[in-house]
Image (cartoon, rainbow, N blue to C red):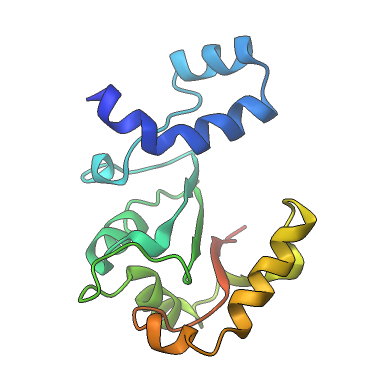
Length: 159
């Protein structure tokens, strides 16, 4: 199972390795201070005393995202990130991130942060590439599964 899942988690492992020395990272993962798990493995759990990150949320269904949102324990923080311009779901399936943004927008304790090309921290050309795609007139016709051109971040900011 690990061999099947690891390629999808590689970007997350790369980011962890950039931030934490390898020996400490191995210690944290061995002792479950840091746990990397697919969304499907969250069913039935309560995530308390945790800092949870769901990345690529644009590729979750409404039920998957609701399931994760209802796992939050009393002492947990949840960060959800997703780019609504990069949905990989089948055309007939709506991203759960759209529904969450609609339903959770006015709930006290939840913040929604919208990012755009000015927030890009990759190569300087990436900003220009994003702008070129955003200006493409055929974008509207091709992107029928998208309702926004911004990256979305939902953050549980309860104190």
